Length: 208
Length: 208
Image (cartoon, rainbow over all chains, first blue to last red; front, side):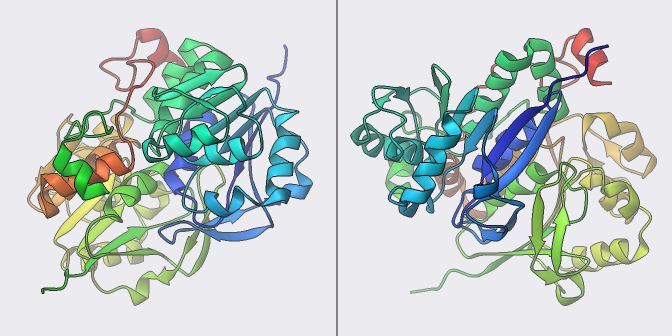
């Protein structure tokens, strides 16, 4: 009997991360057959999310030299990373080894700052579409956008849809559907206000 | 001008938690006006999720004596908690102080083991509906179930819907909709397999 091949899935954690950006894909992708999940970051130890949940980096990024799937989440902390050359160099280096390079929300800004999105179709959190375009991306207003091996998701919760879509490409529909059942992902939001195209002017104004 | 009253929101963390159960509601409820979020657990320090993400407990439960909103998430680690009298006593004590006592996924089993669900309409992860009924609950197959101040959600991802619903009750529709927009929660799952009623027999068999 053949063994299931390992799938190395690497999540990048940093201070002022939006946790759901990482945890949505994590709850999906960690169920892939052979999944080996690593939480990396600048150094081993605790990071704090934008709303102060503490998360643990288990492996320093200097000790991570490849990934089958890289997930770069977003959050307020992506702004300083966009000009942090050691981080961008790491992203470029890992990207050369990946089967899939992915981002959620403003994680796309870091991929863009690293130069990975030149002429690439991509998306990000709706408020940062213009900034993403300045980084060379062809901005698409879809929730999940694939261009070659780069898969970008829109804001925060869209990482769940991105990861399920990726699970299907990677392992087939039946496994992806079983994962969806395992996280009981049968969304029934009480409102239909989850995109700027759908929200009322009053809600948009309140958000801004 | 009146100040916004503080809303104390307490998340209970434990080993073998399913992280999305907590993080879905956290990304919603931490945006409530006046939100003051506390991550508690048996003792200060790290817990490890069912798939090995490390999360930080910042305040020991013995130092938490009340909550406006209690969120009890699920995961494999709820099984031992169901017979852990100090945990159950803490849940009962905090419940006496809450405006809302909530659970996600198998977190409902802990509320039930604490005796809070006797004759109460409630839900849980689809695989544990029968077990929840043995704890005295009237099991309802909805995604979000409210009975008085107790609000239970179905499996894992349903905590997002629960928290948005609760945000609307607590702060009105417009704020809840602005929060939905802020997490770009416009779900577009690639499959429709997120409940046992919708999944194919093959997917159900694979899951079991």
